[in-house]
Image (tube, rainbow, N blue to C red; front, side):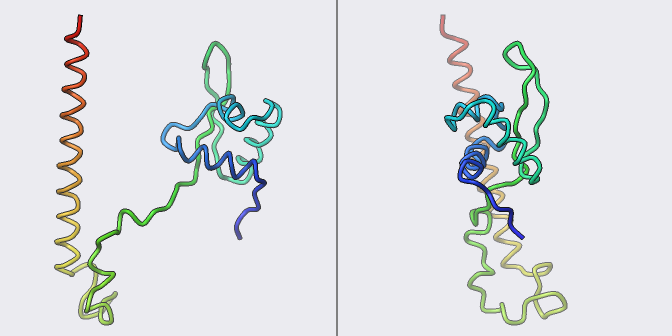
Length: 141
């Protein structure tokens, strides 16, 4: 059963999901929410009790504080966009023990290989561009 969230808890989760990789310091969260440190602390504790965030003790800005790391993730359909399964004419016989299954489908295999190839090439181009930017910054007097 889904947990009931207050409006401020919903706003806090939305903010934390924007920073889901590294999380936010508790003080950053309450500043962004426009609440007092006391209320911000209470929100963080409630979200931790609901299993939505992890509060990690951290030394930052010359004091001990807590970093809030979301334990939930934003769900999107991006990873499966373009998958052949969604419009496959074999869908009615596809499945575990079926004539066709995801384990032996040539269309799905081709799509996965093409998807990873395109992503890999894009990541390589981004890394190359980042290296060029870093070199140009280092070269500046």
